[in-house]
Length: 617
Image (cartoon, rainbow, N blue to C red; front, top):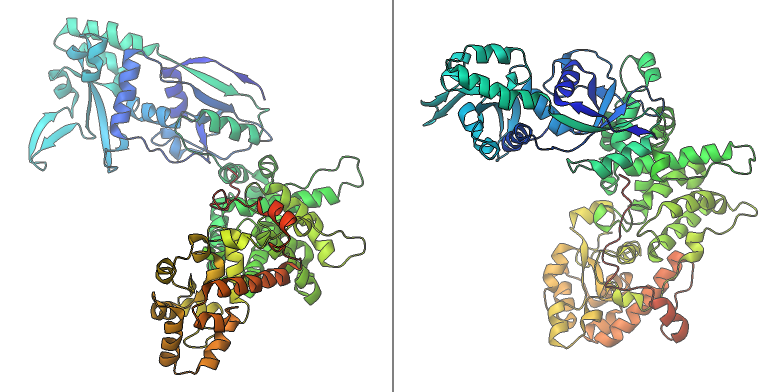
């Protein structure tokens, strides 16, 4: 990447933006500056103070073919003009200046309350000539028609709507500062001395006002554009790879020639989101997640096709590789991935994960969807599915998908398909071998912020659990209908009254998936009391209720005795066995003191506050 640092006069920028020589890349957000900010910008220029650097990118770059768009409010908006430079940083400033200082000078802006309005700007000539410190008071913001009103529009406070009225008020319109019409306006001013002084002390210095630029050359890559933009963008808006690719794909001439329209990545993503609406559990899948999946499959294909080179391209989901995607890459995988994510939603439903609230890791959906694309129909074979399920639970209960996960995405995509198919020589995926679970971890799983907590909740739902009051299976339909959530088995009130420590009181060991009506019956009552009340309301005997409780791994006899210590120890063991069945791995019990203590130290309940997701921006 090469660059220059030229110094251009403001008048040149205005000519270039008005004529379309400078335009915006399509990823730039809409113009948004408010009235007072524009007025302060004009004050800065009239004082001759610096307003910062703008960043420009030379067009004609084969690596970066962004679709351009003219600055808002310029004459070039309605013309098909190819730009020479793209404005990466300085959109708000140059758009404000172009609208205020050219044409009719009317700027489409907002007030302090974010209400849309039109404004024109003027300079009180006599105040401006009192010195630099008075420029602040000299610059006047007026309604777009030049008339300031009061009393709900009935009274005119000031009228600057015509050149005659402006001259009478000795108030110069700033849109004439860089126009030949400015001298004509001054020539007709009654006070010739005022006109001469204003021209010499205000107009001429402003005419030579310079703005420095950083001009990136044609060798600049998309990754460099993204990095540079984020580091210098004075508007404070993050630039995502999705926005960069939206502009890049829209600039694909081959697609336009074939279809007669630009490809709009944003519109295509909206189509994907619409397809996903039937699966609430996919609501958290973001555009960058989808692009990561496309990149994984693209780089995998490139890796396999490299014909035994000593350095084949790596399988990757990193930012720089996403930015290398072409429109053809995207179009190759978009439909298979849409289908794969729908398959993932059904896979999750089979695991009793129905919505984003109890989805352990949304990041894990990315490699799972890619694995489905690679394995195609094999992913539904019983023996293959069993291994996919084992891998899935190892990732969750081993808490391996929090933090930075791009490397794990790659390893899983490379390792899981062959292993799941039981192919000869296939090694066990590192996500399976790395996963461990320690009995004492159950004590620190106390909120749904932890992935393992959500995982155990889903496993309990899948253990033939049924509602205690209506004996309904807690499947996808009844889960919503019954407003199922996780609640205390020994109520908080009872625990506090009986001196139960907070760690055990709020542990997942003392939680169960309970319908809203059942939880209301439980209230703060002791188990010995609420179990009898549930039997009475449900009109069932103790044996029937005990069967329902046992399906939730609740030791019913100890529960009815209000024996918290015995209940906690027994249910903790049952949950350990549930985890072992899911992971197909042994849970280290606390009695194995040396090893269990070593692994338990890996889990800090205070540090693991929220499972993070990867955001590629």
